[in-house]
Amino acid sequence: MGARQVFVRFSGCNLSCQYCDTQQALQLSPTCKYEAEPGSHRFETRENPLDAETLLKLIRGLDTPAGAVHSICLTGGEPLLQVDFIKQFIPILKKEVKLPLYLETNGVLPDHLAETIDLVDIIVMDIKLPSAAGTPPFWKEHKKMLEIARAKELFVKIIITGETRPAEMIEAVSLMAAVDESIPLVLQPVTPHGPIKHRPSAEQLFSFHAIAARKLKTVRVIPQTHKILGVS
Image (tube, rainbow, N blue to C red; front, side, top):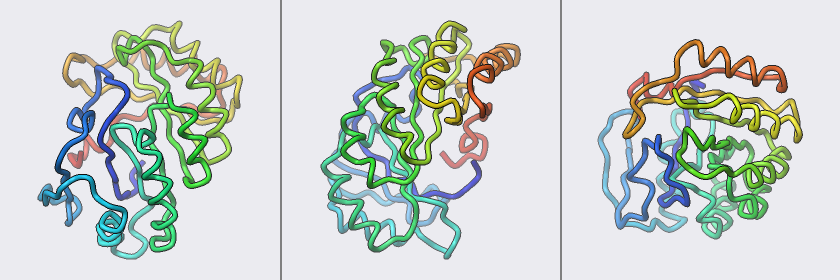
């Protein structure tokens, strides 16, 4: 939290979570946007899909000043849907840009992660609670993802809404603890968006934190700081 990253946002997602605040990334688009001056909100439009060499050139232009950028974040959408491009691109990238690769994933594509695990350095995966995401449960997929991802630096994020139920939280943290109780968990109160109108109450957050802390060694409650800072 608070570190600078270069975001590479992939188009396309296999889920449609009701709290999603990047609806523009859910479908493949004929164009993409590039913010040459970070934080300026001035974007250049380019044709999709970008080839590996073009993307590498754009990333090199954002890795400045020296030491300012913590990592390169592959996010989405769902980046693991484009596993073939990732396998082609990351080896080229690592030769040119000496920054950690940070993968954000929805946590339901374990086979795709297995294909790319050796290429990334840090993984943040979601556990989708059905009441929050409006999706079916993915406990089996999440467990398999955790078993693969724990080979790298890993933490889990769970979005909490006003409708989140204690039973779901118990299921999620039990699943994590069964794999490794030392995996850090971030509980993130939802930012109201679309059909989600209300954040969870302070009482709910304290309750969910207590449930998680009984089974896991590290549990944090952290809001979407980029929303607070106005750099989304």
